[in-house]
Image 1: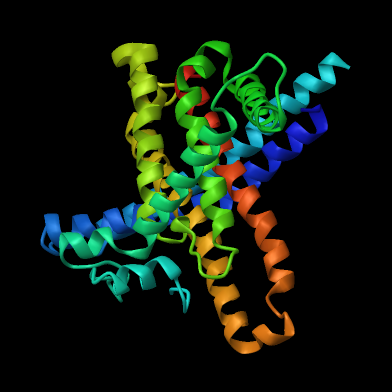
Image 2: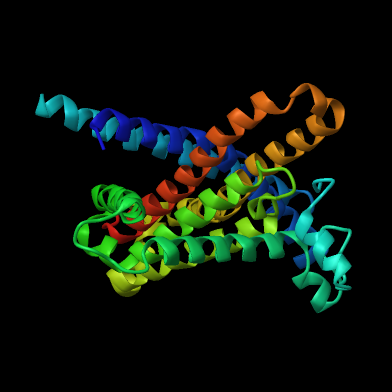
Length: 83
Length: 240
């Protein structure tokens, strides 16, 4: 497989996937927070653990977004050096 | 949403087997006769028979069938090798190549009227994703032993309470997003085709969507396999 096509496939996979990953991370964080609030602590800590879970979920979402940007930046830098 | 006509379900109903009308059945037999199960078996039988017929006797000078498979398998082999190295490719090739062929055929089969994509049910895609997710952790533990946990705690010790939940959440997000992306894309294609068939099937309205459907099917199979390979490679490499 040629280099251009391989890079295209990588970009397609990573950027086509990040939208779902972003939403999934936020939902898992929020869901975990709600679960802790309502089921584990019986609503005594509501709504704080929900907010904390949401914050962690958003942080995780941005982390996976930046990870993809950094991975591509690394490969770009390597390419520039080899030129 | 289901296709209006699924010929395997009709045959099974004629044979007197219970075909569930909801998404899943209640009894065990009903669950076995659910459309996504029967069409999964159809895809399995198709792949098995085609490879048996074309690869029945291997020859030094390949014929048409053997040539096709050599192209497909050889292409996948180089592709995996570029992304995760020779050693892991040799170990994991049968699993990932099976996923690739199964998902591609299962996606494309839904374009034929009377058939349904097994991947348009969340059960199928979630099963595939759970296998991939557990495998990439097993690979990580086998490669690093117990120090695999260093993948999840970040670079410095005082950031652990902050980074550990973030890493765990983003790891579980893989499980969710990988399954829902494949399911969502294929289910949307199936639903759109079914609606267009009902509305204006006589005027060839579904035709442009079917052309896009071929593209979506192949691309989604490719993306699933590529992400699988990337996750395996990431689990194998050292924590940064």
